[in-house]
Every structure is written in structure tokens, then in C-alpha cells.
Image 1 (tube, rainbow, N blue to C red):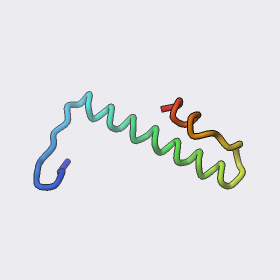
Image 2: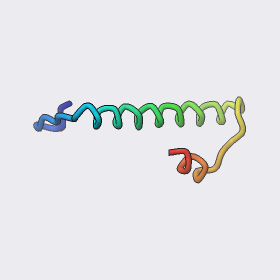
Image 3: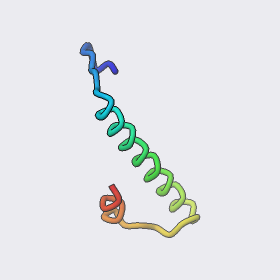
Image 4: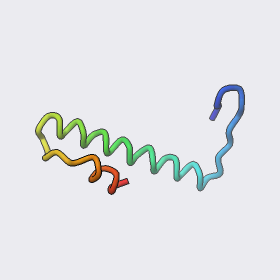
Length: 52
């Protein structure tokens, strides 16, 4: 992964953690879109934070 002009190397464990966090964000964003469309009941911001 490149950050600016620096090269960043993650350990396998760090990469898994980054991937898990990214997947959690994707799931949360999907829930937001479903709430906006009325497909699922709305949640509070605190509910989302508690899920993370």
C-alpha cells in the first residue's frame, strides 16, 4: 500500500484487521442504504457505534 511517497507494509494480522474493519464499514453502509429505502427500520447513530 502506498501512502503519499512512503511505502506502507502491513503484517498479515494487520491486513486482516484492516480487511475486517473495511467489511464492517461496508455492511454498515448497506444498512444505511436499506434504512433510507425503508427496507429495514432506522437505527440511531449510537446503535451503529455500538455495532462497531
